[in-house]
Image (tube, rainbow, N blue to C red; front, side):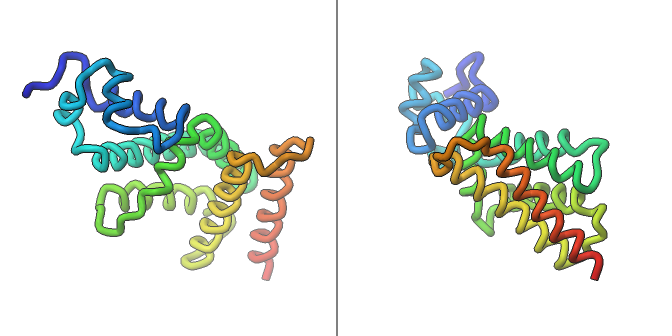
Length: 190
């Protein structure tokens, strides 16, 4: 069967990410996607390897999109300014693309070279953002894990409605990042 005119992997991934963001990851099915694209489900198999293949491609798509957002946010910035800019870009991505963001977190298969490479790029970018602090080897990885934990934890709590008090969550995040950065500065003074 030849591919349908106008249907390509980019169109499929864009439509699937809209479903994930608007209705949740569980709503991403071949039936839902084919209905959104006005095609028969078998048409999708010319571009993807079933639902598992679709979700893998969506995870890669999301990781690449997140990478570009973070890289763009870091241009021309260093140290605290870069950390704040990248953090804002991360939170914006998680807020605008909650389903796609969730899929990026599910990309854990240690045997999948594409997923591992996409994850490695994100880690390396974060190491580069933190490089102005003179962190080396394990220190850098610990700092990356700390920053990722802050951002993921915050976005997860926010997405699940855990911040019910009438305080601006962006102010809370800013204060949390300032505490993290104070720790980084202190660590490098010793």
